[in-house]
Amino acid sequence: MSGRSKLATVLAISALVAAPTATASAATEPEGPALAKKLAKKVTVEGVNRHLIAFQRIGDRNGGTRAALTPGYDASVDYVAGKLRDEGFIVSTPTFDFDIQVSDAKLARVDGVNYEAIVMTASPQTPVGGVTGPLRVVPEDATTGCEATDFAGQDFTGSVALIRRGGCTFEQKHLNAFAAGAIAVLVSNNVAGPLSNVTLTNPGKIPTGGVSQADGTTLATKAGLPITVDMRYHLETRTQRNVIAQTKTGRTNNVVMAGAHLDSVETGPGINDNGTGSASLLETALQLGSRPKVDNAIRFAWWGAEERGLIGSTKYVQSLTFEQQLDIALYLNFDMVGSPNAAYFIYDGDNSDNVGAGPGPYGSAQIEKAFADYFAAKGVPTEGTDFSGRSDYGEFIAQGIPAGGLFTGAEGVKTAAQAAKWGGTAGVAYDPCYHSKCDNLGNVDRTALGRNAGAIAFVTAAYGVSTEDVNGVPPRAKRADARAAGKMSLAAHDDHDHLAVA
Image 1 (tube, one colour):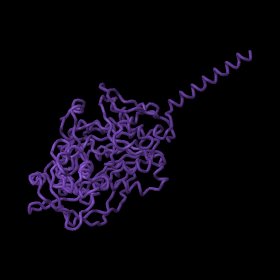
Image 2 (cartoon, one colour):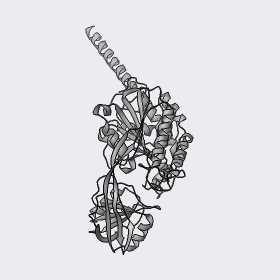
Image 3 (cartoon, helix red, strand yellow):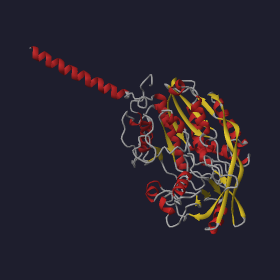
Image 4 (spheres, one colour):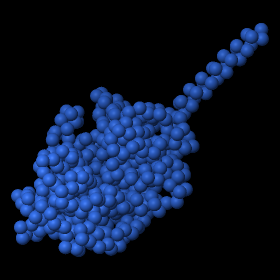
């Protein structure tokens, strides 16, 4: 808990919170400590955008990518670490080892023609020689393969299911195909280019791989023909770096931690995913400075190999002793905060939406409310989003560390109600260039980016001043009210006793 109690009115945070969806329409100044207000004004979209330009140019100079295990990622690490060191932060780039899948077979053969089929991370492999069955094509719509009913009307037993990307996770598509009786799944890209370096999130049930948009369109014309899918790999160990930076001020046994993954996918420079989160976090750190007037040290992290399965953040948390984990008061995660068809999502810490995963550890609901109150004061409505396990909060939550953060949407489709509320286009993905080559400087909603950057700065700084509500301690104002009420009760009791004696 914090040594001093400056956060009496920060964001109207309380120890017990109700459902935090914000619906305000009129902008006001968010309540909070002077440091948070000042930092939110200093972190501008122009400053954040300069870092996005840097990431774009790094990608351009390194084969169009900033993916882990590429020179583009190494250059991104050097850029971020260099900026932080120049500002005086305590910076380290700890390494971690992990296994990668090296392909031994990646094909789908139908009608005598081979097509590239790249196995997804966490997918089972096929046996040598592959598996063979009739090709069944799931009818294409905005949420292809996302509902069990999409598989009705055809017999998928023993088949290879072809599903277009979009509308939900790869995991959901493959689970529905498995339930329908498929023996393998091919997900075709919904934008130009191959579908590679993607994950099922959790260990898969049946072999699942990705094919390019063009190959998927061609394969869809082969429905009913026998198809053989051969997707196999072996593992090799690689080493990668995270970037960790901490302020020189504040308690080191009650640290506020904020992170964003720095790597892109192999197919593009990853400017929205996750240049926006990385750049917003970097500008927040630089404008905060290495010696801010905070009670709690603030630790910033840029994670490596997130796109390969949340590896950098997972390895980092697992490398800490229990006492070192206990030193972390909370974790804030920022993964995609400038999607071009943006939503304003806040991680559902209290599970008020009752969707998917349950609530986060104690304190997660308070973090959600902190962000919701900030956006409410700015007149921006928000919605909750599930802790689905798709970003770097996962291992923090697994170890009992409260977590929260912001997200503007990926391959999910914006609804008509959301378009009416936030603008943008209904029936289109929040980020049509998600995990694609076109995720470049033109793939960012800078209004959303600016709003989210302000929220990131404000809430991070506010928790640097006090984490009392997250730590289960009532804020000072509530403690003062309780003491005053106690004194009044005692005085009334004394008066009663005095009258009784008299």
